[in-house]
Amino acid sequence: MNKTSVALLYGGRSGEHEVSLRSAASVYKHIDREKYYIHLIGINRQGVWFLQNTPGPVEDVLSIEEDVQMMISVIPGKGLSSSRGPISVDVVLPILHGTFGEDGTLQGLLEIADLPYAGADAGSSYLSMDKDIAKIIWQHHNLPVVPFRSIRKSQTEAKDFDWKDLLEDLKMEFSLPLFIKPSQCGSSVGVSRVEKEDLFQEAMEKAFRYDLKVLVEPAVNAREVECSVVGNESPKAFPPGELVPSHEFYDYDAKYIDPDGAALVIPAVLSQKEAQNVMDIAVRAYSALGCSGMARVDFFMDRLRGELYLNEINTIPGFTSISMFPLMCESGGLDYADLLDELINLALSKYESRHSLRFSLM
Image (cartoon, rainbow, N blue to C red; front, side, top):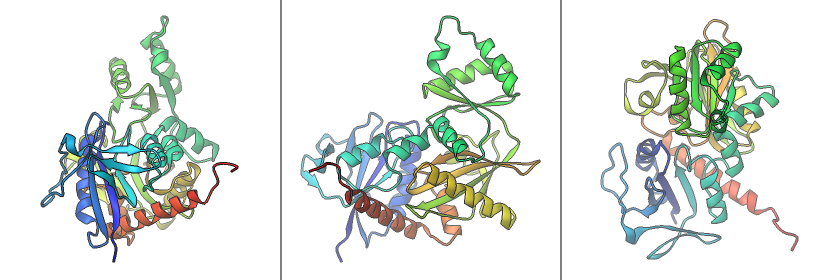
């Protein structure tokens, strides 16, 4: 049997570089090497791609060897190449989180190179990555979201701008505490919970280090519920899970570094009606953004009223040993290796569908 050639991309330029190294190590350990030939391609923090030698026993983190003789070129219409010549790739499995990974830039590059790839396309990736735009679209589809305001960095650079005026304006709309987050970052990078007024400016400036647009939301006394969705035109949601953070909120360390950062309750302790509602809204949110392949949809569930709010969607969710996305799929009957099979099959199917279209009149 001929093996399918898979390019596993990991690393990248975003603040979630380390997360990607952990996710990719887990994927590499679980993918069926009897079915697939794996090209490991590590992307350093400057965005340079390097073909990697086949590693020995993989621990929890993949490394990136920056050998200039193994640098990768992406050639429009011709795929990938190195100094050794063209690299035969049937499908790309991008395990890259955050900026330059799941924001549509990588996906556009892979489409120009004429390579099938797993996950959402360029447009859906961008819409999903920008929390501001995603929430506007969800509101248009009558889906529930936490109230929010978006603030652009350029607004804070105007001559007549005053941080106190902005805070007072936000307090008129929301009450403290507030959550401040970059609009286009994931994994809680740059996120702050602001309980005191004198911490507001610092939290905003921190978020602006990662993005030119920042979201401000009121804190919700809520349970954190998540739902995995897999599929193209007919997506399927899996039974939701719940995160019970031991930190102040589910921050970067709790997600990826501290093994005791949160209790993962899978499946979540919900009534059948509540769980089905989560799954239904997850699929609607996924479809509203035109997603394909995979995503993890995150919710807040109000502890007092039980109301459900969409928080965000991740089109390349974490794949580490403690990541919710593969664990929820496994709980719903799709184990890790079979999940990777499904994502690869969905990628190839999406590529075939797109290539059935005409892009010119000739």
